[in-house]
Image (cartoon, rainbow, N blue to C red; front, top):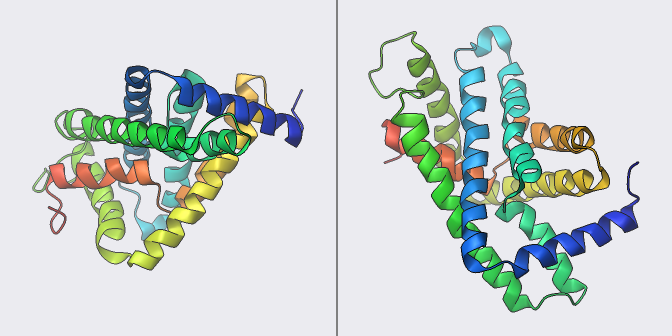
Amino acid sequence: MARKPPEIARAAVGSGAEKAALRWDKTLVGSFLAGAYIAFGGLVAITVSAGLDPEIWGSLPTLFTGAAFTLGLVLVLIAGSHLLTGNMLLVPISAMHGRLSWGDVLRNFSLVLIGNLAGAVFVAYFLAVQTGVIGGLGSEAGTPGALAYERLAVIAEAKGLHETDWQIFLRAVGCNWLVCLAVWISLAADAVSGKILGIFFPIMAFVAMGFDHLIANMFFLPAAIFAGVPGLG
């Protein structure tokens, strides 16, 4: 049975308080895992959409990318870890209800940001590039690694070279609005299936629209640099 909005709010307050109360080492480990999970989502999104010619497929590759990327937040919320963009909803709402101080919020955000970055970069270097799942400049044409490299280059160049600062800011706002909606909706469900369904559509939407997710960019841009995409190093 789905929770009503006031019940979701109470669950969010409790969740945020629990996250902020964790010891620093547990927060860092959980944050590392969340960064890695989002990077896994980014990696699978690249591989399933690689090689799809826009002249044939039109904008559908972005839809496939978004659908696959939802894996990341599913792992974060179902397996249990700490993602900065989700904590930006849960931890401040706890402070607004007097369960935490704003110092607690800042401490949590700082630890989670560090852990998320470490997890995303770890996957980008060791599991994306060093494994050859994403090839490099000069990879044999037509191979899975070369196709993944080309897809990563398109994504990373768009984010790193072609967006203005104002566009990045607005795309980040749109992204986190939808991410927080996904977290909020997932709190409405008790069953894992309901949580996954609630996560799927907002996350698919922000990726398909090309919005910018801070932690996802911690994977896409370093992976592109490690793979040797020109202009990003």
